[in-house]
Amino acid sequence: MGDVFIRLVRFPCMRTYGMSVLDGEGIYNIYIDERLSRIKMLETIRHEISHIEKGHFSDSVTALQAETEV
Image: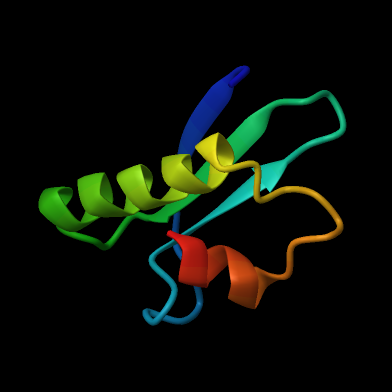
């Protein structure tokens, strides 16, 4: 799976709990909204890790497809 860093940030919209980004060095960065409860943070981290495990970072997978597969 490679390196994964979890970063707490404040999203401008509370409808977004988290997101994952694969950077140019092959490192996965999971961004989690810092205002979430610890339980919701853990759920969101699990959700984002499933995107990484399922390889949703290719050009052939749309965001909609990735969300339906999780």
